[in-house]
Image 1: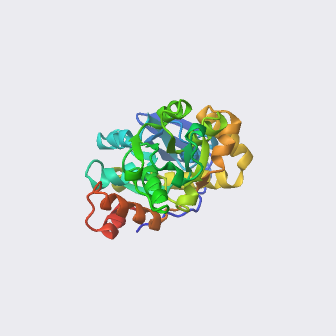
Image 2: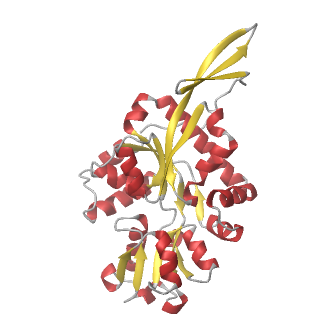
Image 3: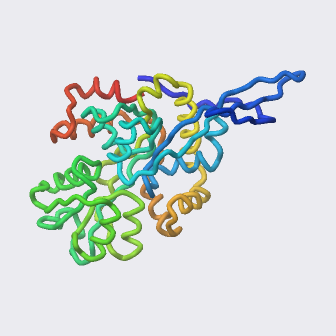
Length: 325
């Protein structure tokens, strides 16, 4: 398994920049009038719309970490779902993406896309929320209730099943429905569903609007569970390993910033999502930002997908050896 160094590159301050074709070349004054040219690698990057789990991307962009690592990062797509983003990888439209572990693993396992995980984006960050009208205050109260998750096989689907099993219940004891997170907001506010298990910032939007109460945080159901990853196209990684290394370093710096500068992180998160500060503040308290990949969590999740017949994985360990770099 390849490990990425967190060490920083010493950068020479550029004194003149020239844009040539698709590559940005920087002419750098060095010594007695001597100049060298350094190619700035262009990367096509995608991420999920309005997803605080992927805030490290915005921090790296706003703080100039990508540029400092010699990268020119182009936002090539902002997607409403993980499967949609994986479809962009399959079409050759992306080089790097911030995306959920679920769609990435499923796409690779089922031959829908060739990507590898190069960093973690976050842990935790979801919750089970029930409408006040449902009367549900615990997981056991959900028996016979209508509960929404984003889709079958998602981390949220797994979390719901895990929470139910701890109460000696299964999904057959509830009415599980599939719904996009934005639709959950309206459904919970009108009591069209009794509860939903969804990621931030949708959880905090529901709570601050008075449409729901948190029954259980995902971190209480499955401590430090994997959520979003940074993935690279397999071909792009093979052809441009140094560029991927540089992006991972920028991501690590952004993650460290989120861990160490909570006040400025809150301001950047509000900018990134366009949401009110009180919503974002609550949401951030439920998310753990971490760049190092936790293999154990991905192993458990890959096993779940295999057991459910959703992923075609014969050998979990061999799969993870290929999937994680």
